Length: 148
Image (cartoon, rainbow, N blue to C red; front, side, top):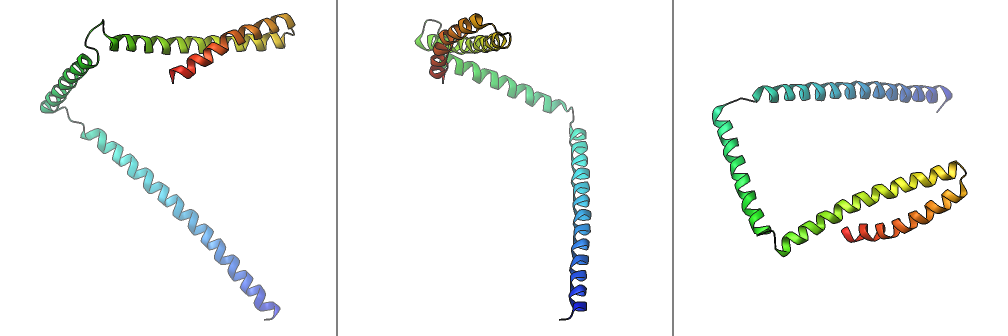
């Protein structure tokens, strides 16, 4: 192969790659346009399909009523009364979750106070708050691990 053939082959390959790149961009833009227009058409059609038919509203009302009746029966099964073991477990679990949240907020507040004392170069406040943080964070860690 002479020099002229190598240049011609190289030029042909470069032209092919440029054409492929241009065509790929056109295909991607066209595909995106099709997806976008079809999505808009679907959403417009979906909004216009909503009808306020009276029978549909009755079915929704009936299914809502059935749902609440079934929920009421389930609550009676799960919690037969206020003086039961199940109710006590539910109350304890709820209190644990609420206290976990409050303790986590307090620990975050203490973190902020520790950083503030460190930035303000108040050594005594820093040490005091670190010990306070240790006193709260260790039980908080236990509480969080028990609630999982």
